[in-house]
Length: 199
Image 1 (cartoon, rainbow, N blue to C red):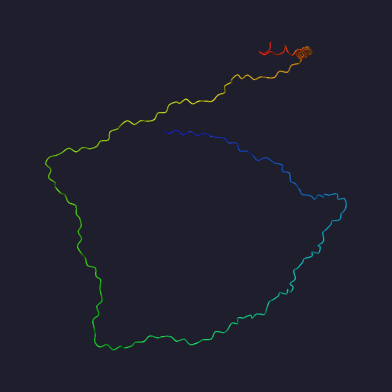
Image 2: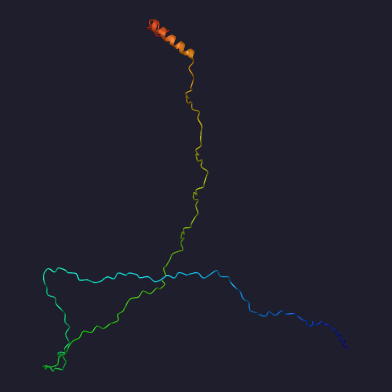
């Protein structure tokens, strides 16, 4: 027995609806542009252009003396007779026929000795040892980088004594004392200096 199932689907179909369409009808439109008044327009006129043209003129050249001028006049080509040599046979009388020897170089093969390798048996008394040089590694001095002290310049301060002149004021009392001492030395010169020096 087979069962058959039927399903009914209801589909809504859209119905047409009225659409309002606005139609534009062309109509004449007059547009007036206000113009003040007609105005004159200056049009440039063509003007005369003066062009200087070089005109050839005669130039007199001084010639030292008259000389002959040879004028080449072409002439017509005229055919002329040419003697042409034509070969012909000539019979020469010979006493008797004779043989003529013509050297002929002919390649003649010759035997060439060609070395052919072959085995040779050499009698040996007994087997002997053959020394074979063997490569033995040996140490090689390899340079190794190491640190090196590099002198670096730097600033060093040294104490330096510099005499600086200090301005000072002279007092009036010092002037009086200095003037009185000078007068005292002028009055008593014998007490000013001694043989062994000053007091």
